[in-house]
Amino acid sequence: MDTPQLLPATPDGITRAAAALRGGQLVAIPTETVYGLAADATNESAVAAIFTAKGRPSFNPLIIHGDGLAMLEKQVIFDDRARLLADHFWPGPLTLVLPRQGDATIAQAAGGGLGTLAVRVPRHKLALAVISAAGCPVAAPSANRSGSMSPTTPAHVAESLGAAVPYILAGGRCTVGLESTVLDLTSAIPVLLRPGAVLAEDLEPLIGPVQTPADLVDETAPRSPGLLLRHYAPQRPLKINHRGDCSPDEAFLAFGPNPYYGRHAATKLNLSPTGDLAEAAANLFVMLRMLDAPPHKSIAVGPIPNNGLGIAINDRLVRAAAGSGGHV
Ligand code: TXA
Ligand code: MG
Image (cartoon, rainbow, N blue to C red; front, side, top):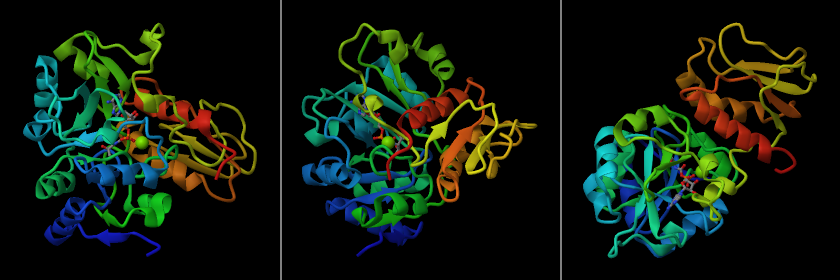
């Protein structure tokens, strides 16, 4: 089998996806953020297969998805802050890093050897239905080869992973389009490890100030192993905050009404002609993938406001630019 089998977004598709998960197989499933490469999180060999399929370093832990608080409470310890945030934002694009329960059944490999686990309840109906039908927590990193852009359509998953994933539950395009916010609650002051659609300003009224990794320069050990890695990178060199001319073999990705388009660019796309950051987030990986193709030799992105969801968009673009170019 060279290509993954697409399972339809029907009760039968959900049943087959859940049966495959229970049988220890990998299934790409849609969530509201990006597609996840799912496995039964309690099955050591299924979890190991995720790392192999993605080419992901074993020290980079996976997010554990549940169909509700009850399923995840058996695996991690919720304090008052975690409970408040779960009540408020779940199901939704917020991942909480919490201490592992002593009798947790999550495979050790999923936690990357840390004493903590990252957990979330996704807002996508198909994801919730599959997790409930499988009856087990589901480990699911983004369904792409390690280092490349996260997939927001079934076609992206198939392009990135090919036959390494036997099944894709086809749920159309992801509405949020950027990975979840990751919040570490294992310290007195919570740390926002990855910005996403749940903003610091949404969290702070409930739990007080949150820090970012930049505030923790004194720490010797990185909080989130994955943050150090090349990420979200297109194959072509990527320039960000570009305000100058373009070369004729360059693509330009703009934002907002009356955007500046680099002169001479071969192709020009706009993340959101109305200046809507949620629309821009949903289009980011889709448009970068479209432009990361011949005849373009490079991609330039114009300035994007660094507020609200723009913080998460710029975070992904900075990492993408740092790791882009020179690989296939
Ligand atoms: O939106 C999302 O979060 C998607 C969908 C599928 O849910 N998943 C996703 O997973 O983006 P992944 O594996 O690509 O990113 C998980 C991030 C990584 O940066 C990882 O290092 C961090 O979460 N992480 C996981 N467990 C952690 C832990 N125990 N402590 C700190 N960081 C952790
Ligand atoms: Mg990822």
